[in-house]
Amino acid sequence: MTTQLKHKILLAEDDSDDAFFFFDFLSNRPDVDLLPSVTNGVEVIDYLDGIGSSDDLPDVIVLDQNMPKLSGKETLESIKSNAKYGNIAVAIYSTYVGPQLVDECLQLGAAIVETKPATKEGYNKMMDAILEAV
Amino acid sequence: MLMNETKTYEQLIEENEHLSRQLEEATDTIHAIRTGQVDALVVEGKDGHQLYTLKTADQTYRVFIETMNEGAVTLNSAGLIVYCNSMFASMVGLPLSMVIGMSFSEFVAPQSAQAFVDLFEEGWTDDNKIELLIRGQHNLIPCQLSVNALELDEGISLSMILTDLTMQKANQQLLEQNIEQLAQTNVALEVSNHDLLQFASVASHDLQEPLRKIQIFAGMLKNKHTGELPDDSVKHLEKIIDSSNRMKTMIVDILTYSRLSTNADAFTPTDLNDIIADVLNDFDLLITEKKAVVRVDELPTIEVNRGQIRQVFQNLISNAIKFSRPDTRPELTIRGELKSDNESNQETKPAYCCIQISDNGIGFDEQYAEKVFSLFQRLNTKEAYEGSGIGLAITKRIIDRHHGTIKAQSKEGEGATFSIKLPVFQYDYSTKT
Image 1 (cartoon, rainbow over the protein chains, first blue to last red):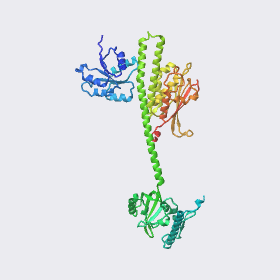
Image 2 (image 1 turned 90 degrees about the vertical axis):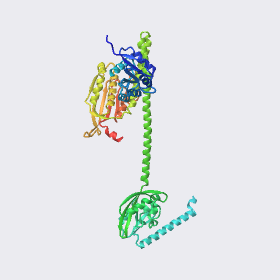
Image 3 (image 1 turned 90 degrees about the horizontal axis):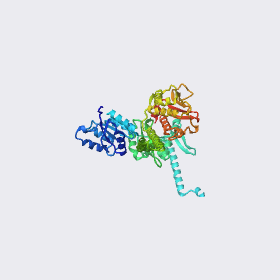
Image 4 (image 1 turned 120 degrees about the vertical axis):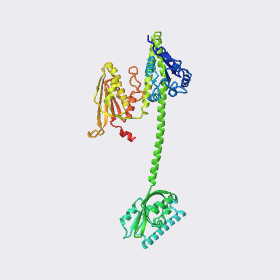
């Protein structure tokens, strides 16, 4: 049996249903380790600041674009400008993804920008794409 | 009635004054002729002004000056009026004889006084033009004043032509008002257009959130409990999923429709054959599945927004295949040709590209030929033929934005033909608008 690399994934999502879908559809995947999710961008920064050893940092951060306090894009900007955790791969996802959002997020260093799926298969395809991009 | 014919004391006084002015004028004229100051005179008679010249005068010239629409004035070196035509006299509202001998500066409005002083100084050496205000009988008249120094027998004098600019100024003001009004309307339109786009975007975006959840939760119910649920309930769940999928398509299409006006139109010369090949490639599976026959003529290269025209062909080809008759093999023909603006003159450069997309499908009643392009207009039940009802509205809007036309012709059960007319070049429009 090969030991598969498990990506530690942190989700920032203010909508509890969407957080539920994320866990329900993806927690059984052998290639991901879903960390307890946070509900906005400020919590993401607090969480990252509170980690002592860089080994404990997540491998991928998935940010919802529309969140209170700090939007996904703004959180992305804060993450990327930080020396300690600026290298963590960031994915942005949103209900509606326009070309402008894609351009801006990629410019700011996002690995990928995805539309929120509407099925279990959609969620798995999205996670495949995210893991391929990081 | 009688009252009107009886003259009041004031009227008599006024009439008397008028008559004494006329008498004074006549006396002056006789005096002037006698002393050789004038060689022509104008007399106001029943038929208007009449000109009398003395033998030595250049009559043609006099008549010309007297009948022109401009005021003509000649000044001596002291700035006194030595000659003027009757137009100038009527501009200032005084009898001709009274004007002669007056200082011209008396007719200049205070706000133009300095400008006239300057002009009067320089006018003797340089021809010049200024705009100034002249005191009329009741109002100030905006005039253009041009001066030329003239060498006459009696010495040098300054000849001045005055053009009344009242009408021109009024027109100019009206024009400025109209421009201002247009600018305001334009701003209001832009605001309302922006609001509308904002609305469409927010509505579409926010509508998608709950809809997605309906899709997911319904999907979860169906997948997790298919075995436990009665057949009826599974069917109902499938209806929920189908309906929400259809609504999702509609929302995405509305968003596309509203965004058509935000994207700056970038028109580039595009080979329509490439676009058709591209679209047919996308429909490859459907065409094979339906055993459809597609014939495509050679199409020209014209200036279009590639992405938008691709959507037009995508919608029309998709419709042609979708609305096929169940028992008949779908046939689809795409034809295109260039036409000149003037159909009788084949020599002129082609201005339009006419494209026809015909099918042998179910067609529709000709009375709906206009209606099919309206938003949410459906001619068939969604059970039989799925779709958002926005496709042809998007198509029409794109063709409109390309300054073209689209028409539908059909008979029920005998297929449909969509005819598109697009300009070959777009630059004419972009420079005009």
